[in-house]
Length: 503
Ligand SMILES: NC(=O)c1ccc[n+]([C@@H]2O[C@H](COP(=O)([O-])OP(=O)(O)OC[C@H]3O[C@@H](n4cnc5c(N)ncnc54)[C@H](OP(=O)(O)O)[C@@H]3O)[C@@H](O)[C@H]2O)c1
Image (cartoon, rainbow, N blue to C red; front, side):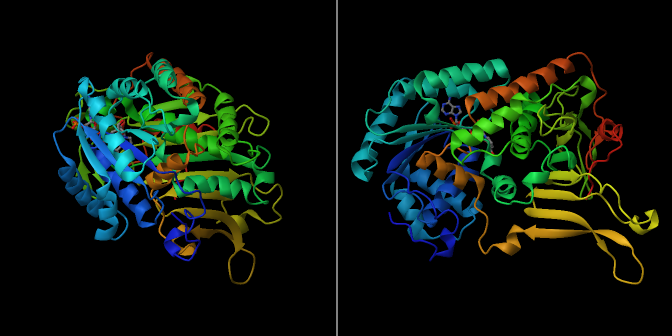
C-alpha cells in the first residue's frame, strides 16, 4: 500500500510512518466492551486513512456463540456508534471481508486448533504471510491459558506480537509472575503492554514540548521549578465495574500506571534518540529514583453522596456490587520525590480520584517566583506564580501563566494566559489513543508501550504504599461526590505552604 504524502489532510501526522507488514490480528475477548468501544472503531479509522496493510485479517475470539456474519454485523454497529469518522460502506466492507469468528473457551482444548485453522485460512486467502498479532482483551484471569495455548503453537513463518491490556498484575509478585509467563513464550521485543495514556497526543506532546524546544529544558529543574502538580480527576463513578474496582481502587486503577507514566515523562532526562529503549531507559531511571513516600505523604479517600453538575449521585458504598463497609479508596493524593540531581527536594504533588468536581487530566509545572520583583506589593496583587499547564484532557493544549501589565495609568500587574489549543492550531481531529497504539504494534514500535522493568518499578512503589495502609483504617466515606477529595488532601499540600491548583 502506498502512502499518499500530505495530499490527503486525513493522513497528516500518521502518514509519516512505515507501512505495516501484511498480518492477521486475533482479538481474544472480541465480544467485550473494549473490542466494541475502542479496538474496532480504531481499526476502522486506520483503514479509513489507508494505514492498515492491504493484506489484513481479524479473528474475533470469545466464549459467546457466533459466526462470521454475526461478528461483522455486531462490529459494524459498534463502529457506527463509537467511531470518530463518517461511516462509509466501502471502507467497512474492506475490513469486514477479512473478519472471522471463532467460539472458544480457553479451558477447551479444541479452541486453539480452530484459531490456528482460521489463521492458516487467512494466510491463504488474504495473504497475511504468517504474521500474527494476539490481542489479549480479556480479563487477566484468562491471560495464562491463552498465552500458554498460543505460545506453544507459534507460527514458524513471519513474526508474532502480543498486546496485553491493563491491569498488568495486581502487585509486584503477580506482575513478575505474568512477566515470567509471557517471556517463556515471547521475547520482550514481541510484548506490547498497553497503557493507553501513552497513546494520547497530549501525553506525547510532553516530550515534544520538552525536547523540541530550546527554552524549557534549561529551566526544567529544581533551580527554577518550585513544584509539579499532576491531577487525574474523573467525575464518573465506577459505572457498574464494582467487581474490578473493589479489588483495584484508585491506586491500582490510575496511580500504578497512568499517573506514574505522566510523572516519568515529566521528570525524565532527555533521551539520546527517540527509539523505544532510549525513551524507556530514561523513564525507568525516574521510577528507580523515586523516594518511597512516608505515611504522612499519602492520603486516600472514598466518596460519599453528593452532587455532580447539579444531579445527586450515590456514595461509593451504595453502588451496586460494592460492600456496604468497603475500604476501597476512590481517591489518592501524594507528595512524591525523585531523588536525582535535577529534582532533589522538588515535590511532585499528585492526586487522582473518581466523582471529583471536574473531569481533567493536567500536569502543572509551577516555577519559582522572580527573585526580586521591583514592584510594590499592591501593584502585584493580581499576580500568581508562572505555571506551565499541560492539559492532557479535555481542552487539549498547553497554557503558560505569566504576569502582564494591566492597561491604564500606573503599574498594576495581573496573571494572564498564553494558550495553545490543539483544536485551534491544527486542522485535523485528534486520533484516538488506540489507533496510535495498534498501528505502532503493527509496525513493531514499542516506544509507547511499557517494558517489564518499568511495570515492576511501578508496582514496587504501589506495594510499599499499600503495605503502610494495612496499619490504619480511615473513616470512609471522607469526601462528598462533586468535591476535590478529602480535607486531608488539602492539608497534605498546605503543610508545605502551597495550594492545589483550582483553575
Ligand atoms: N473496557 C475498557 O474500556 C478497558 C479499558 C482499559 C483496559 N481494559 C481491559 O481490557 C480487557 C477486556 O476488558 P472489557 O471491558 O472488554 O471486558 P468485558 O467486556 O468483560 O469482555 C471480556 C471479554 O473476554 C471474553 N472472555 C472472558 N473470559 C474468557 C474465557 N475464559 N475464554 C474466552 N473468552 C473469554 C469475554 O467473552 P465471552 O463472555 O463471550 O467469553 C469478553 O469478550 C480487560 O483486561 C480490561 O481490564 C478495558
